[in-house]
Length: 140
Image 1: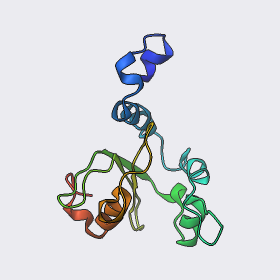
Image 2 (image 1 turned 180 degrees about the vertical axis):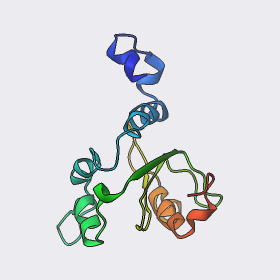
Image 3 (image 1 turned 90 degrees about the vertical axis):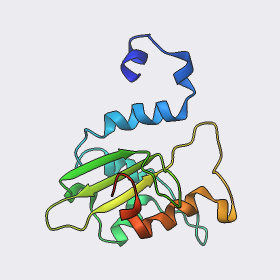
């Protein structure tokens, strides 16, 4: 779709389709190696404020001694399914020789707020799913 957009061939139905846009954007980004783009992207990804301070994802990763640029491989899995906790839009899996793999789930939203509260909270379910990555299909 992105190439169609760039050449004035937009598909109206796809312009407001969250899944189509997610696959278009991340379908292209999956070709970028871990040393390109991703750290800059994570500098701009901010978490919820804790004690009045909102950390970026790169700050959180640095505290865990995770350096995205040091990985050699990035695998992008669209809509992996967990039998109990649901289907995040993406699982990004970084790996490299001698390094522990790093998995990041992304839930993209278009014209929508965060989904659910309490036991029905979508992000909480995906966080719980990280305890059983082998339960995903395809397996993470």
